[in-house]
Length: 114
Image (cartoon, rainbow, N blue to C red; front, side, top):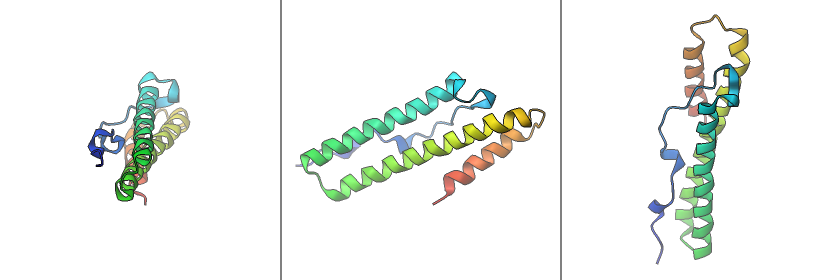
């Protein structure tokens, strides 16, 4: 009998807004904590997938969990890309009041890819 997969954390379900990196990049504690929390949730979910495989659970259920982990890691990668852009562009366009809106739009566009 298979154990329900709902007990496995689902990082893709995390809809909290990402912390801003600003010019400090991952030196900003809020941005660093955001990325670390996302990675820890994905790590926990990967461990859950390992347990599912060890128990011989249904391949479709395992595949669904893989898909969720991939989405979570993709989301974290997008967050890191935006953080990099904030860090690089922040110093160059420090006086541009529209930069935060541009970066928000970029993050939305990157998240829609695929």
